[in-house]
Image 1: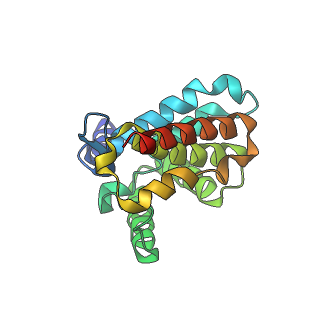
Image 2: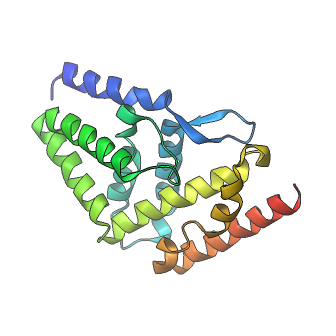
Length: 186
Protein backbone atom coordinates (compact mmCIF):
# COMPACT_ATOMS: atom_id res chain seq x y z
CA UNK A 1 0.00 0.00 0.00
CA UNK A 2 1.35 3.39 -0.90
CA UNK A 3 1.27 6.39 1.39
CA UNK A 4 -1.38 7.97 -0.87
CA UNK A 5 -3.58 4.85 -0.71
CA UNK A 6 -3.23 4.85 3.06
CA UNK A 7 -4.30 8.50 3.26
CA UNK A 8 -7.23 7.87 0.92
CA UNK A 9 -8.51 5.10 3.21
CA UNK A 10 -8.20 7.35 6.25
CA UNK A 11 -10.01 10.20 4.46
CA UNK A 12 -13.00 7.94 3.82
CA UNK A 13 -12.95 6.56 7.37
CA UNK A 14 -12.80 10.11 8.75
CA UNK A 15 -16.39 10.55 7.62
CA UNK A 16 -17.45 8.45 10.62
CA UNK A 17 -16.28 11.25 12.92
CA UNK A 18 -18.99 13.45 11.39
CA UNK A 19 -21.62 10.74 10.96
CA UNK A 20 -24.14 11.15 13.77
CA UNK A 21 -25.64 8.15 15.53
CA UNK A 22 -29.10 7.90 16.96
CA UNK A 23 -27.81 8.19 20.56
CA UNK A 24 -26.54 11.11 22.52
CA UNK A 25 -23.73 11.23 25.05
CA UNK A 26 -24.34 11.67 28.76
CA UNK A 27 -24.23 15.45 28.26
CA UNK A 28 -26.78 15.31 25.43
CA UNK A 29 -24.38 15.78 22.50
CA UNK A 30 -25.13 13.61 19.47
CA UNK A 31 -22.69 10.72 19.36
CA UNK A 32 -20.71 9.94 16.20
CA UNK A 33 -20.34 6.51 14.61
CA UNK A 34 -16.57 6.77 15.18
CA UNK A 35 -17.13 7.19 18.92
CA UNK A 36 -19.32 4.08 19.02
CA UNK A 37 -16.73 2.04 17.09
CA UNK A 38 -13.94 3.26 19.35
CA UNK A 39 -15.81 2.22 22.48
CA UNK A 40 -16.65 -1.28 21.30
CA UNK A 41 -12.96 -1.72 20.38
CA UNK A 42 -12.10 -0.58 23.91
CA UNK A 43 -14.62 -3.06 25.30
CA UNK A 44 -12.92 -5.87 23.34
CA UNK A 45 -9.50 -4.87 24.65
CA UNK A 46 -10.77 -4.77 28.24
CA UNK A 47 -12.34 -8.22 27.92
CA UNK A 48 -9.17 -10.06 26.81
CA UNK A 49 -8.90 -11.89 30.13
CA UNK A 50 -12.58 -12.90 30.08
CA UNK A 51 -12.14 -14.59 26.68
CA UNK A 52 -8.55 -15.93 26.65
CA UNK A 53 -9.43 -18.58 24.08
CA UNK A 54 -10.46 -15.99 21.47
CA UNK A 55 -8.32 -14.01 19.04
CA UNK A 56 -9.08 -10.62 20.61
CA UNK A 57 -6.97 -8.79 18.05
CA UNK A 58 -9.39 -10.12 15.44
CA UNK A 59 -12.38 -9.08 17.55
CA UNK A 60 -10.92 -5.60 17.95
CA UNK A 61 -10.38 -5.31 14.19
CA UNK A 62 -14.01 -6.29 13.63
CA UNK A 63 -15.12 -3.66 16.12
CA UNK A 64 -13.07 -0.97 14.41
CA UNK A 65 -14.39 -1.66 10.90
CA UNK A 66 -17.93 -2.84 11.58
CA UNK A 67 -19.67 0.45 10.69
CA UNK A 68 -17.46 1.63 7.81
CA UNK A 69 -20.44 1.18 5.48
CA UNK A 70 -22.03 4.10 7.29
CA UNK A 71 -19.38 6.34 5.69
CA UNK A 72 -21.57 6.05 2.60
CA UNK A 73 -25.10 5.82 4.01
CA UNK A 74 -25.09 7.42 7.43
CA UNK A 75 -26.40 5.70 10.54
CA UNK A 76 -29.91 4.30 10.48
CA UNK A 77 -31.11 2.98 13.84
CA UNK A 78 -31.72 -0.78 13.93
CA UNK A 79 -35.42 -0.32 14.49
CA UNK A 80 -35.74 1.92 11.40
CA UNK A 81 -33.33 0.15 9.01
CA UNK A 82 -35.07 -1.57 6.10
CA UNK A 83 -33.83 -4.45 3.97
CA UNK A 84 -33.24 -1.92 1.15
CA UNK A 85 -31.14 0.23 3.52
CA UNK A 86 -29.04 -2.80 4.48
CA UNK A 87 -28.54 -3.87 0.86
CA UNK A 88 -27.48 -0.36 -0.18
CA UNK A 89 -24.98 -0.11 2.68
CA UNK A 90 -23.52 -3.55 1.92
CA UNK A 91 -23.28 -2.80 -1.79
CA UNK A 92 -21.49 0.53 -1.31
CA UNK A 93 -19.15 -0.94 1.30
CA UNK A 94 -18.24 -3.91 -0.92
CA UNK A 95 -17.61 -1.59 -3.85
CA UNK A 96 -15.26 0.54 -1.74
CA UNK A 97 -13.48 -2.46 -0.18
CA UNK A 98 -12.94 -3.95 -3.65
CA UNK A 99 -11.30 -0.68 -4.77
CA UNK A 100 -8.66 -0.78 -2.02
CA UNK A 101 -5.13 -2.16 -2.39
CA UNK A 102 -5.27 -5.97 -2.61
CA UNK A 103 -3.81 -6.75 0.82
CA UNK A 104 -6.25 -4.41 2.56
CA UNK A 105 -9.18 -5.40 0.39
CA UNK A 106 -8.63 -9.10 1.04
CA UNK A 107 -8.31 -8.68 4.80
CA UNK A 108 -11.40 -6.48 5.08
CA UNK A 109 -13.46 -8.74 2.81
CA UNK A 110 -12.49 -11.76 4.91
CA UNK A 111 -13.41 -10.00 8.14
CA UNK A 112 -16.75 -8.83 6.74
CA UNK A 113 -17.59 -12.37 5.56
CA UNK A 114 -16.87 -13.71 9.03
CA UNK A 115 -18.83 -10.92 10.69
CA UNK A 116 -21.84 -11.44 8.42
CA UNK A 117 -21.88 -15.20 8.95
CA UNK A 118 -21.78 -14.86 12.77
CA UNK A 119 -20.44 -18.41 13.06
CA UNK A 120 -17.12 -17.90 14.84
CA UNK A 121 -16.80 -17.04 18.52
CA UNK A 122 -14.93 -13.87 17.52
CA UNK A 123 -17.75 -12.67 15.27
CA UNK A 124 -20.37 -13.44 17.90
CA UNK A 125 -18.40 -11.53 20.53
CA UNK A 126 -17.94 -8.52 18.24
CA UNK A 127 -21.69 -8.46 17.49
CA UNK A 128 -22.50 -8.80 21.18
CA UNK A 129 -20.28 -5.83 22.01
CA UNK A 130 -21.85 -3.77 19.22
CA UNK A 131 -25.32 -4.34 20.62
CA UNK A 132 -24.31 -3.98 24.26
CA UNK A 133 -22.56 -0.67 23.66
CA UNK A 134 -25.75 0.74 22.12
CA UNK A 135 -27.70 -0.11 25.28
CA UNK A 136 -24.95 1.26 27.52
CA UNK A 137 -24.97 4.53 25.57
CA UNK A 138 -28.74 4.80 25.81
CA UNK A 139 -28.49 4.28 29.55
CA UNK A 140 -25.93 7.09 29.69
CA UNK A 141 -27.91 9.49 27.53
CA UNK A 142 -30.62 11.75 28.95
CA UNK A 143 -33.90 9.84 29.00
CA UNK A 144 -35.53 12.86 27.35
CA UNK A 145 -33.69 11.80 24.16
CA UNK A 146 -35.28 8.32 24.12
CA UNK A 147 -38.01 7.47 21.66
CA UNK A 148 -41.07 5.67 23.07
CA UNK A 149 -40.04 2.31 21.56
CA UNK A 150 -36.63 2.51 23.25
CA UNK A 151 -38.08 2.02 26.72
CA UNK A 152 -38.85 -1.61 25.86
CA UNK A 153 -35.93 -2.07 23.48
CA UNK A 154 -33.42 -1.06 26.15
CA UNK A 155 -34.88 -3.77 28.39
CA UNK A 156 -34.72 -6.60 25.82
CA UNK A 157 -32.07 -5.78 23.20
CA UNK A 158 -28.98 -8.06 23.02
CA UNK A 159 -30.05 -10.67 25.57
CA UNK A 160 -30.28 -13.24 22.76
CA UNK A 161 -26.77 -12.81 21.37
CA UNK A 162 -24.96 -12.75 24.74
CA UNK A 163 -26.40 -16.10 25.83
CA UNK A 164 -23.18 -17.91 24.87
CA UNK A 165 -21.32 -16.21 27.74
CA UNK A 166 -22.20 -16.19 31.44
CA UNK A 167 -20.08 -13.07 31.92
CA UNK A 168 -21.81 -11.12 29.12
CA UNK A 169 -25.20 -12.32 30.34
CA UNK A 170 -24.39 -10.95 33.80
CA UNK A 171 -23.23 -7.69 32.21
CA UNK A 172 -26.52 -7.47 30.32
CA UNK A 173 -28.45 -8.04 33.56
CA UNK A 174 -26.52 -5.19 35.19
CA UNK A 175 -27.33 -2.99 32.21
CA UNK A 176 -31.02 -3.89 32.58
CA UNK A 177 -30.86 -2.83 36.22
CA UNK A 178 -29.43 0.52 35.07
CA UNK A 179 -32.23 0.87 32.49
CA UNK A 180 -34.94 0.12 35.03
CA UNK A 181 -33.43 2.58 37.50
CA UNK A 182 -33.24 5.27 34.82
CA UNK A 183 -36.89 4.73 33.87
CA UNK A 184 -38.00 4.70 37.52
CA UNK A 185 -36.20 7.99 38.16
CA UNK A 186 -37.71 9.67 35.09
